[in-house]
Image (tube, rainbow over all chains, first blue to last red; front, top):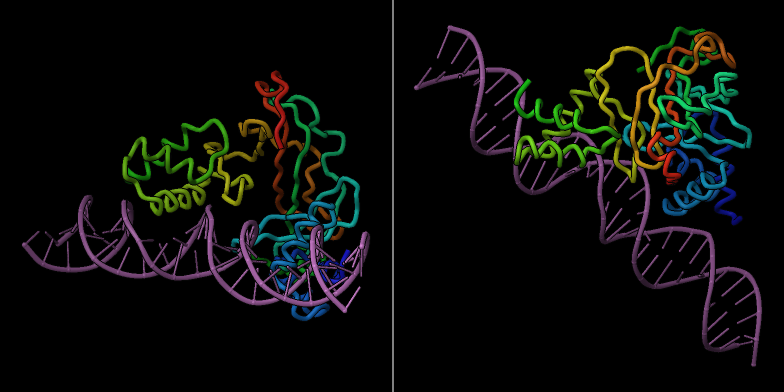
Amino acid sequence: MTDRRRSVAAAADGFARAFTVDDLIAAARAHSPGIGIATVYRAVAAMEGAGALERVGSRDGSALYVRCSEDEHHHHLVCTACGAVAHTPCPLGTNMPDSAHEGFVVTSHQITLYGLCAACAGTGAVRG
Amino acid sequence: MTDRRRSVAAAADGFARAFTVDDLIAAARAHSPGIGIATVYRAVAAMEGAGALERVGSRDGSALYVRCSEDEHHHHLVCTACGAVAHTPCPLGTNMPDSAHEGFVVTSHQITLYGLCAACAGTGAVRG
DNA sequence: CCTACTCGTGATAACCATTCTCACTTTGGA
DNA sequence: TCCAAAGTGAGAATGGTTATCACGAGTAGG
């Protein structure tokens, strides 16, 4: 773990919402001025591989990521107004489709819940 | 609805699995030789807007689509071995998180189930 | 100190899916 | 026929992401 990688991780920690690699580059430069684009992309790939970062869709053609420090099975709540992201336990509960569905043997799943965070719901904000 | 658009729709109907725009262009050219890339992209955008096509992730940097003729709420089962896609009713059932979660007011969700289709499960195929 | 080697880095070129531009054609109405 | 609007195809442009390459830091051996 180098200084650069630590800067990227710290920058990722600073986001309370989903961020693009571009956002991350800007934030990482606050910690390590002059850090290169390629370095951030490499750090993102490493962190994604380690489960410290998770891709949650995209915005305007660029990938969106969220910081994931937990190892346990969870999903994401994304605020469609401000982009805030929260973790939430798997909503499938006992309906976990781990057996045959339509002839498929389901082994994993990906769920993203969209809505309004407490702050945005309070103001009646709407987006997209 | 022009001839070109009809060709793209027919080509999309021919896929039993998720396809990229590139796949669609190749298939559309079987119906309309010489159809341009831009035209297929335009048709895809129109069909996606009309709900006739749905984006289900991506493969190697290019978007994957599936044909969706149904209007009702449903999700997708994707075979990780062969890419086959099936529609499945919403697995959330009575657990539908339409109320507050973590302070969020959930308004919609996106679920993709991954696994092996009947054919691939039978052969013990594995991919990715 | 010197060499050899490895690895992370930064700048930039390359890549490629997607979108834009533009000239042309088609369609439909009058 | 004339006109306007929309669709089309070829290719250029765009832009996020990845590959390339040279450089410096660090390490090991001598």
